[in-house]
Length: 442
Image (tube, rainbow, N blue to C red; front, top):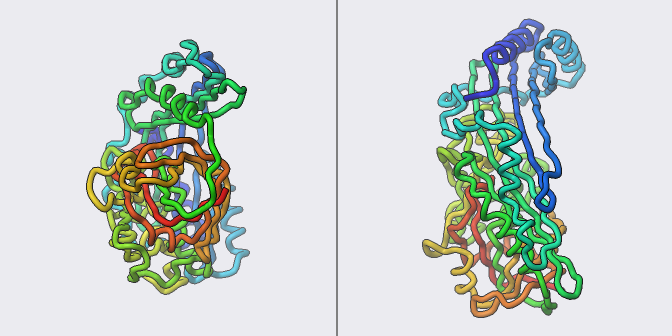
């Protein structure tokens, strides 16, 4: 099953050939096609439906040592578009480092797009009535749960198809379906204070998405926010729920980007091969898991992905270096970014959030971040958080309007546990994380 048809593939080929004939020495063409259908409900009633179809063709041109990138959604007639694009590229300054990736680095195992098994064969068997029925059936508003004020939900079905060709013979493709249901519940306490909770889930396969559990989970999370109590400033153990733990992992991955390194805007400059994180931290780019949403056999340059360590036992193993930055920095290219990073569990198998809370004893469980910022060059951060105080491994009350501050290198060197409870529906496989001696201020 795919969306890009043989006619569109031929149009992409002709676009590449035409660009070469018009004077480009090297060309990469990327054709993307996406469909999303959505049914939204409000308080158990149909609120909206939408259908979005997006198709675009992007082309990277290297002309007489100059580089330009352009895109259009009118792929049936690219002749005039290419004339103007090449004309504009010839007006630019030369850039000796612009190039296509070496053919030996590119993907050879993705000619069909379905090799990873990320397409549900049941996807075509859908229509608006079926989506609406799914969304309405999942709602619990009309059962009148105590304290529930409002319920906003969206159910969506998507399919995406991408094809990359280049003038060195590259041909690779990726096709993926997705089914997603998310709900926000708002509840009210006896004093009239309102609290909200959100939950969602997604799957590549329609029959593996259990929408019946999502509204109750969102309601449970909303009710848990009731009756927050102040908590004094100090240093505490911090446990970060897997739902939001990527907030402290993403800055580390960004600091490993060649762009950040080259611009002296990374707190991990010069750290490849060095042990700057604790022994317990291992992050793997686990990007080739068959059947797992987010897995990819190639990056946007068409470079073949690999399951490789990013950080291993605290040692930084690689930067993310695309073809262009490799030339500028005089370094070996890797991938342009992490495809599907996964934090390995530590210090013992089978840890989930509850076991980590028990292991930590007391502290603050963070379930949400409310704004804040970080300095990519120093690693300093300041984030607003919400969550729960816990004691003896048991949650005792919600906390709100607190701030955590520190430095990422210090924070990660205070890592005490990483669970094995990452959600497979998320792009980053980050489990519950625990840290000691974190500065909280009220």
